[in-house]
Image (cartoon, rainbow, N blue to C red; front, side, top):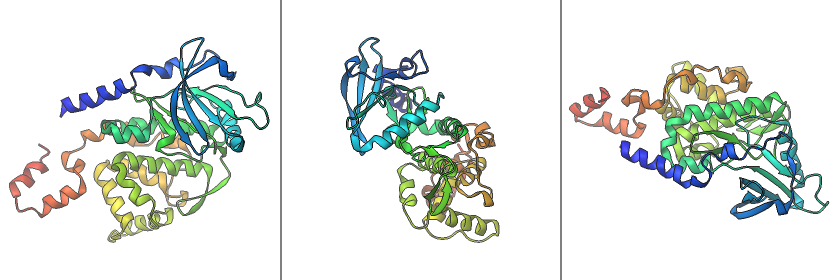
Length: 332
């Protein structure tokens, strides 16, 4: 098992061999973004096409440094302007750095180009292809929240936080990207069945990211159901506090599955990220960083019984093999 883990980690590092240390490489000496000039960069390949435009991997000819180039068409100027405006105000190790742009120099109907520091992959790809990063979930969440706290300190909200907008490198350094929907934090949005400001939406989104990292792709089947709302979660908590039986629906199952894979402190954090202020939910990212969950060890250090998947545990409890049951209960 240890050999397999080592192999996966080595593959992760090798897949990014060109850019090991790229987070350090791709930082300019000045804090002020340069004006983008097409002749300054060599395109190395297309990284993807998205609703807002096309993303390329590029090399700066003068320095040889690797960056990302986003090209946004004329119809996406508002999105591009939001991103540039936000990144001009932000400067933090957990937020992607803007290197250059042509927002001022472009023609009225021309594309916007934004050059950003390069990271090997997003968190969605890493979680799907490198399950060993689950052991670093606590560290990853902490870095995300540090970035969110910095964004909120500027009176801004990201408003589009998900696994694809979180970048990660082999050293487990995390950076938040894609600020095209960034707005003033006090603006109201409808999210998870409730109207909330941008600050709360960002915080609730971190709760969803936490569930994705611990449950994997299984979490998606809960997220897009009528049961997964803030109000539904608060009713579930009230039922549990009053000693009632958890509902036999997707939300009740989600609660049980999360309870099985995180510590008591982890479950407390998960719920406080999602529920509203009136039921004890967090309202500031900076405060979340003080939660005792982040002072614990890894989930790998929890008793074996608590780390065992719920379905397997249920099968084991129904088993007639008492010796196997006792053996596993001892965590051996």
